[in-house]
Image (cartoon, rainbow, N blue to C red; front, top):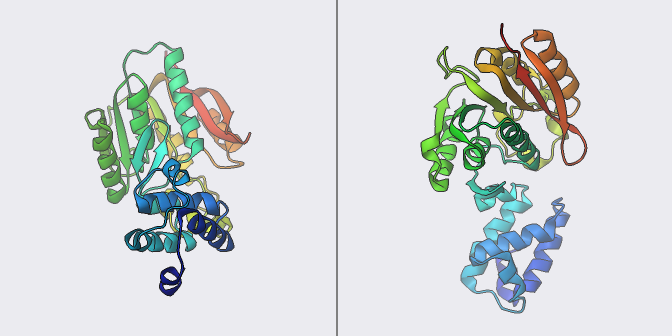
Length: 298
């Protein structure tokens, strides 16, 4: 959409959505029209539903000026969530930017598994550790929906923790989440013990970058995506150290990449620190979540 083209044409809401949707599809954006609707609603400062109620309304020059750069960014394959500056995760609206991975539906299943285990065991109060918290999506969902008195949430990225801290304040949950900077278990004291350790760690192999969509490869933080030649470096590190900080009988819950579940399960079983190792599928039927319990001590 060129400036001269905008000035020459009489853009109604419907015309602009139709033109923009096709334009984005030509740029490789699969859901071109849907994304155009989100962007236009954002530029007009209305809901998507409101767009449908005013299809024939002409856009003002101010609205077009706000919309053009948003459309350009999406055509460059910047993720919609980064452009809008927010995303939904379970029952929360969260801020996201390029410092953090965009929370995905698979990770909602990870939270489901933790909450189901907690409910099934009748816990009234417990403490969890979220490794690699990013936007804080997992940690905040646990304290929002479960009987967690506190969640310690670690991340190696200072900028990611700044986003997570803002999300905690925005959702009114900051008093129950303890954000700490550092890799894996490094921010913990040796005697800190948790009922739950949960993580959505990086699990993409370094050599698989080119196979990813541009929205992921070119925009999301590499440290939150890539994990060594086989994609398993972070998962090994967590599986190796979790036993030192997980209460006997406590739950370890990990999101894993495609084809990794079997290896992670075998690795946990071989440590002899974990029992009840099992896998859960995501919405597409792929093995995505590995669960295990710290073995009881004599």
